[in-house]
Each structure stands twice: as structure tokens, then as C-alpha cells.
Length: 168
Image (cartoon, rainbow, N blue to C red):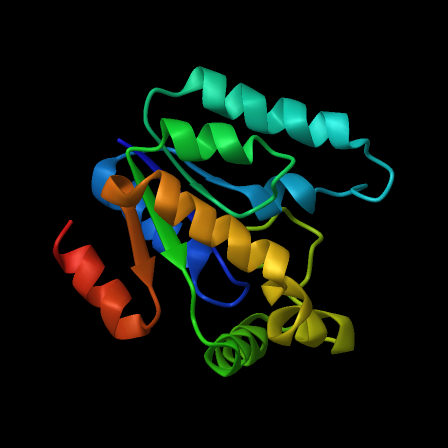
């Protein structure tokens, strides 16, 4: 089983990916953990691509969460048996991020590499509410739904996530 989990920040991609990985016994790659490795500002994009490609090449089953179009986005969508789009409303996403921040403030979440403490600042809030939801992102999600309608599931609420997991 190969599952790609994409969507807006704060929608719960990493949590869902972890739960799906546990359910199917599949290895999980959180693309945030590739991008936010220590030294990420100095590391060339080629290193991130190499890490993502090595994961794809070395596993027959996987769950990968994250958007990151430069990290084999089209390949992940094509190879996935199931694509889960988490498209929560912006204020719900913001609420979830604030809740996550309260839980992990100053510490690193389990799905991120060490030395990457949880933060919440104006730039990230802007990303959640506006920049991460630009037309380009919306069009990318729509294109995937049109290209792979038989294997794409859209989740817009926690209730839909819970129903989805109980039917897996």
C-alpha cells in the first residue's frame, strides 16, 4: 500500500500519515523532516531530493505526507494507491496549529528532526491563512482530483478523518 497525504498546513497530515503507517505497517516519511533537517538553510535542494528519492526507491509500501512539489510530487501521486487531500478551512487550520503550538512550544514534534522547535509567528500564520492557499496550490489539488479521481479522497474535517480511518 502506498499512500500520499497532502493538504494545507495545520490539517493534520503528519498525524494521519503516522496513523496510516501504523495501521498498514508501512514506513512513513514526513517530508517536513527532510526539509527541516539541521542545516536546512545551507543544504542544497539536491540533498533533499536525494533523501526523498532514496525513500521511494527503497520501499514497496509507504505513507508520505507533505506537499513539497520539488520532492517528486508527480511521481508520488502517480505511484500512490491512495491520495488523501486534507483541505480544512483556514480558520480551522489556524486553530489546530495554535493547539499544536501550545502542546509543543519550544520542543520538537515527533514528526520533525531534532533541534526544530515548534514555532508560531506572523510569517507562519500568514502561510496558513493566505500564502499556502494561493491559486497555484488550489489548482494543484484540483488537478490531482481530476487526474486520479478513483484514488483521491478529500477530507475537510476531523469527523471525516475519523470516518476515513474507521473505514480503512
